[in-house]
Every structure is written in C-alpha cells, then in structure tokens.
Length: 515
Image (tube, rainbow, N blue to C red; front, side, top):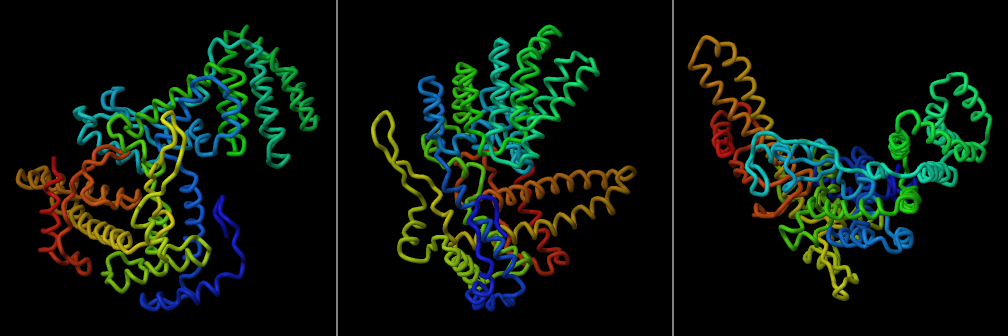
C-alpha cells in the first residue's frame, strides 16, 4: 500500500497505529479496527501530497527560470540541473496550464487552468456570471487548448533536423526505464508512422518493412528508425509537404506515454534540434505564468506557491480524508471534543509515519507563521521568498473546524436542493403550461435553485481547493473573482427535510446570489 512517489511502509505498522489512535477514536465512538485501514490510506496519500508540496516553487521563481531559458544561453546546462517541478511546466503538468478560458475570445484577461473538470466548471460559472478583470460578462466563455511543446516544432525545419529529432526520441526510449515490451511498443509506434508514409501507400512495401522491423532487437529497431527517418520525411515532403505534420504527430503520440524520467532528455533533445523554437516556447510559458498567476495585478502573487494557486495543501487534504473516515455523516453535529479528536488523530498518524508532527514548539511556530522561507539569488542579490505552504505538514484546529463547517453546509444545501427540485418537478411543472401563476412560481423557484446550486458549488470549491481564509474577497484566485456567499443560517441538519421554517431561512439567504 503506497501512493506514487511516497516512501514504502513497513507491513506490520497497523496494530501499532491502531493502539496510538484508539483513545481519540473512542471519543468519536469508533472501533479502531473498523477505520485504521482507511486512515492509513489517507496517510499514504498525505505523504505523496506533502512530497509534491515540498518540491513546489513560487510563481515568481518559475517565471525567472523560464526567462533565463528564453535568453538562449547555456540551455543544455540549465536543463541538466533544473528541478522536476520546473521541467513539468514544459509538459503542462506544473503549474497545470493546459486550458485557456476567455470571455468573447479576448486575450487580455485569459484564465489558464489545468484540464480539471471541477476547476474549469467553477471558472466557467464565475466568468459567465461576473466577468473577469474589468471585462464584462457576455454569458459566453471560450475554451481552447493552451500551446504545447509539440506545437513548437518549426514549420520550416529541415529534413535533417526533423530526422535527427525523431531518431533522438527513439534513442531516449532505448536508454530509458521501462520493460522491454513497453520500449518495443513505443519504438514501434514511431516506426509505424514512418513506414506508413515512406511506403506511400504500397501495402507490400509496408508489410515487408514491418516484418523486418519485428525481427530486430531493440538496438536494431532504434537503428532502423535512424536509417529510414530521413528518406521517409523526404517522401512526406513529396507527398504534399507533410513532413512537419508527420513529426508533430509522432511527437504528440510520444508525449502521450512519456514518463516523468524522460522529460529532461526530451527537452535537451528539443533544445538541441530546435534551439530558437525552444527559447521562444520558454518565453511563451513565462508570459503564461504572468497570465495564470496574475503577477501584474498583485505583487504578492509572485510569492505565491504555484501549487497553492489551484491545489489544496497536503495537510488540508489529510484532514478532509480523515473526516470522511471518522465522521462520515456530515449532517451529524460535531462538537469541540470531536474536532479536537480529529486534530489529534491527524497529528498522531503524521508523527507515526515520521511526517514531521507540528505539535511541538517548532511546529507551532511554523504553523503560526504560515509560510516557509527560501533564499534565492536574483539580479538584485540574495532575497527570501515566503511560500504559504508550511501548513502542508500540519493539522490544526482551525482547519478542522472550517472543513467540518463546509461539509455540514454542503450537506444542508443538498437537502434543500432535493426538496426544491421535487417541488419544481412534481408540483409546479405539471401545471405550469396551463396555470400562469404556477408558471411564474416555477420561474422564481428555478432562479432560487440556481442560487442554491451556485452556493453549493462555491462551498465545494472552497473545500476542494483549501480556501480557508476569512474576508478574502479581494484575493485573486485561479477561477476568477471570489463570490460573496451568504452565511448559513443556524439550523440543524437533523430533521431539516421536514423543517419548513429552516428551509425557508436557507432559501431566503440564497436570494442574494440571484443575478
């Protein structure tokens, strides 16, 4: 049992872990044996998330490194020492710039986001409702794929450059990690594309080449690609100038199965074959960082942790995972003793797995500061950069209380939405075609339902992305402007479905969200 990238765990840890957290589980009226497996899974996920957090960089440092690459000097040396987090930027992995959204197709206010349904859905709703960066909403949001490194292959590249690049891809596979079968499959995809064009549609030729290729060992297959790449691209050029399209297709398919260990050699190969295009793409990515993190709008944005822009920190995710296990009924009221128990469970399992427990003086001071200080060299000399992610190794009472409150509020809104939907579908809609009053009431109810849905979506977004700050309406965020949400009325979830006065209070509170 271990998440990708996390440290292996010994197989006999569960009994000891169960004994350590038993007193706190007792407060929650749980038997340790019923939940310890699920808590261990949440902990393994935490170890992986924490590792990603520790590798993270600030938005400003990302931009600086990209601009250094864009200068075109000593690119190979810089790529050799560049860390994995920055390498991921070139492949859309970090900071997750895969999709661009804009109002009316405009460029000046683009939102650059990962290809994440929840994030994109939240951004669509915000941009269509509120507009963005002083651009008025039109009710229409355009979506397009962000530029990728495969788009940077120069259309005017020579046949020799294209052949050298594709041959280099085969060599990367040959020298990389992976099973022999997987390597043969990846090299075979490259060879298959070349042979299909090089044979110019002659099936007897392509069949003979395929048979010959299948009989070669891995080194022979890589050499085969080196032999046929140039003549195949020449044939593609004769067939209608398709050599550029062919190498781009090969590269796109290659990237689809690219392991992280091959990112560095791929970038070094690309920079060696197409140095100007590589430098230009680094410049495009630096501009994308500007756009994504709104660096020009807020000087503090440059000091923001790049993962925190659209990703909750590891500690927040751990708390949410623990709550799902030990307090599955979000409609059940959680008191101070239960919240304290959740805090102690989180701290205990972090300490148990040597995760840097924050319960001691040093940890408490770190949590109080709420930032990690890094020193780095810039054009102005040595400077420190505060990154607000020390909480990625912490579990504190405030976060537990906020998450418990969010889970409870979402649960209440789900109950209200179910009641309103049933009223609309079964009471009003059947009569709306013949009864004008029923139709008017239905229209008003649908607007209310939309407001409650918006409320729920925003709370879900806050829960998923770790937005625990109070009074943060002016703070920029990945999905656009923050929406001022109403306070949840003091009503109990228990019996809410039959409590008409309480339902009316929630409905009344939601009216401020009706446009």
